[in-house]
Image 1 (cartoon, rainbow, N blue to C red):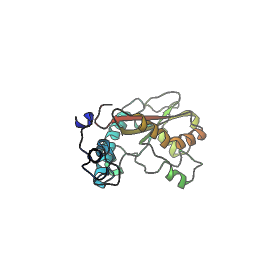
Image 2: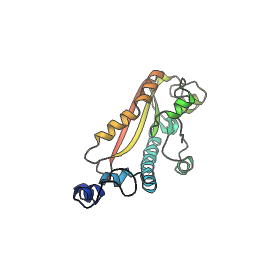
Image 3: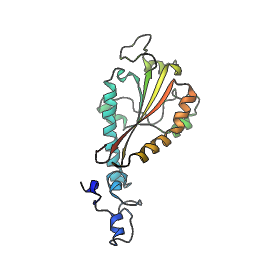
Length: 207
């Protein structure tokens, strides 16, 4: 309630009303604010809490996708926690670097330096079903055997992020800018369609 009414006690307010010599966060070098307290503080413990909250929410999204008509077969990549933690949730797609088959012309260094969305979902351009057929082949096997025809697949980049409850647009634009080079590279690779799906949630859950 204090966040929604703008009355959360923080250094920014204290500085404005003369109760502090500066507006700096007491635990990290950034400027303090209500939003900073809830999701922006760079102190190790606070940062770890924010990452854990982000990963827990992202896992729920990926688990929901696994239950969809395409099943887990088309989830090619996730960056939402360690392999051990994801394994506990029944997920086995943890990668800290994009898979080499995704952008075959990029060097290993370029792949490692590329932006990484929270998850990458591949959907066949003709039919979507968890049943493996000649029209809807096993995506993971095609990728493993390097027999993937990019023109037959849509790539959906999924990015989950927290934002200000009343000003979501800055985080939306930040996500678009973050993955713009990756999207351009995927389009050059020849995938049928490349989409960025940004899921925004207000820091107190009002979006």
